[in-house]
Amino acid sequence: MKIALFGATGRLGRAIATLAESEISEAIAHPASPSLGKKLGSRTISPRFENHSNILIDVSLSPEQSLAAATQAHLPLVIGITALTPEQMSQIEEASKKIPIFYSPNFSLGMALFKKLCLDAATRFPACTLDLFEAHHILKKDAPSGSALHLSEELEKSGKTASIHSIRSGKIVGEHKLLLNTDEERIEIAHTAHSRDVFARGALTAARFLQKQKPGLYGMEHLLLYSLP
Image (cartoon, rainbow, N blue to C red):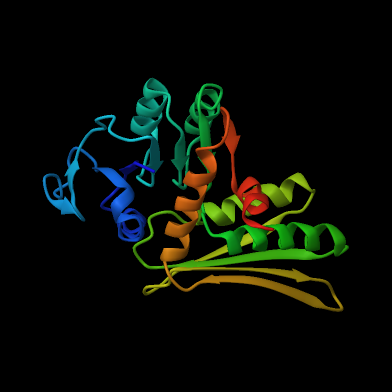
């Protein structure tokens, strides 16, 4: 792969660059970033896409630049941005009619399995109340997390409502726990990320998966099938 990495100077961007240094062909940051002109591995950090890549990964704060670049160049695009607006999601869905796009607020395979288990338990455990706890590092800008919101939305589709409780503390990479309570018993399902590398590896796996796909919108549910025997 030759990857154009948008959001290259963020925590996840740097983790991706570390794991796939030889595959990063372009490192792209915000035009106002103080890191412009500096090195990320062997690449100079640039404010714009120069079309020296065959796939784009966007882990910045907003997808407009990568969407425009990928659509114009007819290249696949992996997006890992949380707290997208309905308008931004609509733009992604429209662009996916022309190019393959992989979108997920969380690239952890374990988190995808966690979501699957939560949805299955919630539909099979009658008359339960749901509490979803999520904890992240103190510098994380959005609360609740995109992963918690996504799981909550999926639960609502099955007729369940979860109360979300957010914690921002220290250097927590990512923790999510769903409590399913009745008057007689309780089920707890939890996922903990020990390192940001799990998200970086997931983004790279998503990119390799996406290179083989036709135009459309893909997510972790597709990668889960791709990654299992």
